[in-house]
Length: 126
Image (cartoon, rainbow, N blue to C red; front, side, top):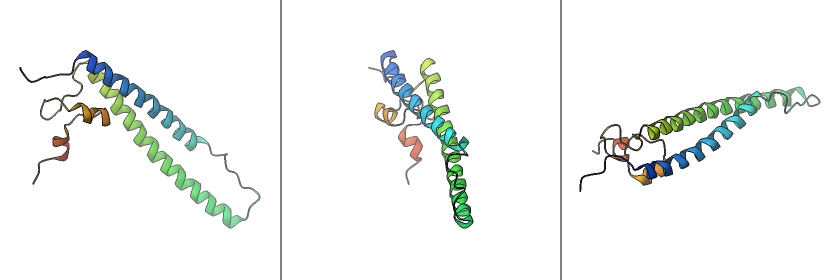
């Protein structure tokens, strides 16, 4: 029996459902982060001491920067998931871009947007 070169349509459908669920959650998380960044009026402290206000503004700026970085990472994750959906439609999903062999299902279930087998991702062993 020859080595399998691609996942069956049924297997691709299973991965598609996993990806769509992750994509929906990722988009919700992204929207939450975005609204957190946009919400500038939420924690007004007009009646507290000037020193505390400066510290509070510094903390809120840091938290906005962190939220911005998280939002960027989330958008990148969303783009990777969307690209994985395209590979499913093209029936090229789950094929290692280095070796051309199938990436094990366990890896794809854990990292559904993976394009490298774990051996290729880790690089050559010394």
